[in-house]
Image (cartoon, rainbow over all chains, first blue to last red; front, side, top):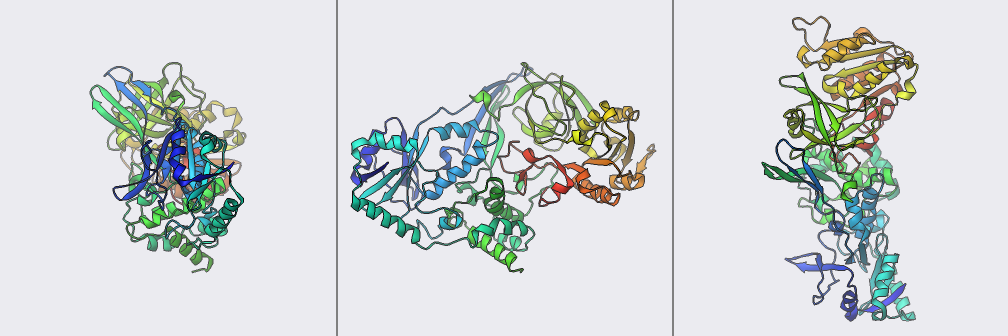
Length: 349
Length: 275
C-alpha cells in the first residue's frame, strides 16, 4: 500500500497506534537515540542516524535468563525469566539498520532458536526512513549490497518529500500500521509518484565511500589471513570495543552468574553484550589465547563481517552504516582496512 | 516459554566424585544424575555446558560413553573460576547441565579398522567415551591401542581404568621426564608414538591433548603414513553459549561448539590456525 502523509499529521498517525508502544529518534544530552514517544511529545525524523543502532529492541545489552535461589544443602530453585510479548513500533529506522535486523535474524532464528530474541522480534515493527542523501561521511551501504532506499528488514518505508512523506507498506504488519492510520493518509497523486521516483533516484545516485570489488572480498580475505597488514592496521587500536557495541549486526555475548546474596545463594544468570576486541574474550583459563593480539582481533571483526558470515549465510554481515568508523577514537576505518588488505592481496604485495 | 529456552539448564545431582590427580594440575571426575526425570542422550565426543549456580558455566566434554544412561561423567581440571567451583563440590550437590553440544566422532565409519588413541593430560577425557565404546563393542574393530602421557606419574588420570583396559587394548603410557618407580616410556607423547610406531595400515588415529602436543602428534602420525582423513582430533576454544551465537569459539567460519569439537585433520587444516 502506498500513501501520502502530511508531515503535520505524523503525530496523528502515532496517536492512532494505541496497541503499540511507539519509539522514535530523539535528541537528548547531545546525541540522537531512540526514545519512547508520548502522545504530547514531538516526533523528530530529521536525525542523520542514531548513535546506537536499534538492536536493543531485539537484543538488549542485558538479559536475565533465570534466577536461582538456593538454601545450603538443598537443590536450587530455578525461576525462568522471559520477556513479555510487546507490540512495538520504531520510527525513523534507516535502511542500513533495517538490514542489520535481517542479519541478526539469521543468527538468532536459525538452527538453535533463541526465544528471547524471537519474542522481542515478533512484536516489533520498523517504520523506516529512506536516506535522501547520505546521513554521514562514512555511509557505504551501496557497496555492501544495500541502498539508501532499501526496505529490507523494514515494515514500512517512508520517503521525505519536503512537506509530506511517501509511505509504503513492506510487510503485512506494516500494512496493518497504515490501515490503523486510515484517513490520516491520502492517496498519492501523480505528482507524488513523480517526486518519489525522482527523490529515490537522486538518493541512490549520491556518491558514497565504497568497498572495492565487493563480490570478491570474501574470497580475497580468505587468502589474506596471514597478511602483515593486519598488525600494521591494528596498531593504533586501544581495544575499547566501541566499533562492535555500536554495530547493528554485532551479536557476541557473555553469560554470567550475578549474585545478589551469597548465603542463601540468590542471583541471576545474565546475558550481556560482549566484544571480540577484548583480549579475554577468547582466552582459555589455561592462559592460551587463540586471538591474543590486536591484529588477530581486528582481523576477526573484519573477517566476520566480510568473510565468515558470507560463508555461512551467503550475505555480508556489514550493512555500511559507518558507525564503527565515525565513532572510533583512534581512526580505525573498516572500509580502508578491507580495501587495503584486499588490494595488497590482489596485487601480490 | 522460558522453560523451553535454549539457555535453561537441567538440574543434575553429583552422585560420585573421584580425585584423579591431586596437586597443582588437579583433575576430578564427577558422575551426575539428572533430577526430575530430565536428561538427554549424547554421542561420543559431544560436550555439555555445566554450571555451578552462582559461579557460572563451562563447556566440558562428556567422558562417559553413550551406552551408560544412568549418569554423565565429566573429568575436570581445576583451571579457572568455574572449574575451581566444581572442585569444591560434594556428593549430593546439584549442578546445571545443558546440551549435548557439538558433533561427534564418526565411530560407525571405523568398523573393521585398527584404532590408535593418543591422549595427553586431561585430553584423555574427550576421547574416553570412544575408547569405552570401542572396547565394549570390540568385535566391530580390530586392534585397539591407547597412547597416553602425563607430565609426571601423578598427572596420569584414569589410572585404574587404564590398567583394566590392558585386557582389551595395547596401552602405552608415558611421562615427560624419568622418575623413580616409572617403568614405562619417558618422554613426550609424540616421541612415544614414533618409538612404538603403530602401523597406519587400515588404522584411524584419534588424538586429544594440549594444542602443542596435538601439533606434533599429527606431524608424527603423518610420518608414520596416516593420511589426513584418518587423523581425528578435537579442538577446544572458550565457549559461552554452545549454540553458535555468542561469537567466541569460531575458527574461521566454523563455530567449534556446533561444527566441532571433532575434526578430521584434512578438514581442520583448511581452517585458519586460531585454536
